[in-house]
Image (cartoon, rainbow, N blue to C red; front, top):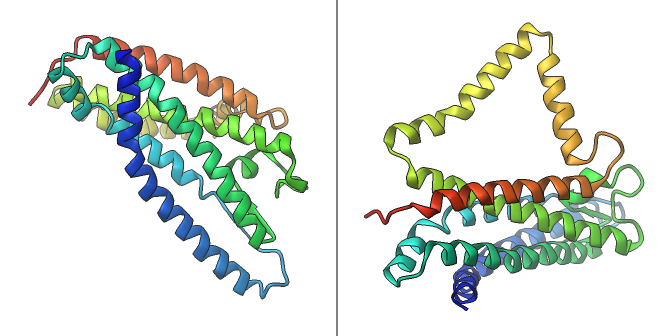
Length: 248
């Protein structure tokens, strides 16, 4: 019961941010539609897409901001760490499902006024000839929803995990965590240089494999990847939150 109340509280906290975010997205989509129609003089197919990438950024930031203040509030109200974490996990799914569905709806409505309006999913997985969600293919729409739901859920958990890492770290550890991506990129760049591009090929092939577009285009490989990554980062987050103390 407590877990569901926490999940409802989190959803309630997200409502205002989601409303503001989608008002901005709808306004941008409307302005871009008007601009594209005028640019195409109403007679040519014009194209834009990828507005839903902003949803990935939004949910990532939402994950980052979902821990610290809420944790202090819940601890002040004698909510256990287990219930708090479980409430976050349960609460994030309705939010990401809503966002995935609304992103598709906005894309389809926008497409009425344009020759082509592609989602992030369509740009990645629906190649040559299928790029514009031909004939409103219901299978493509379902696949897009499942893929978007998995991606958004993963980035929410990733943001939550990063927030926990910083919360539990001292200043030295925070600095080390912050600069580690730069160090890794620098090392990989150096290794790539001395191996005549072999490292970049390996990294590219790896991400193409787990993304589902190394051998054809299969979004469900990416869904599996994101699901496994969600569980892994969720387990790490749970371990970090178990002994987290309230900080002023």
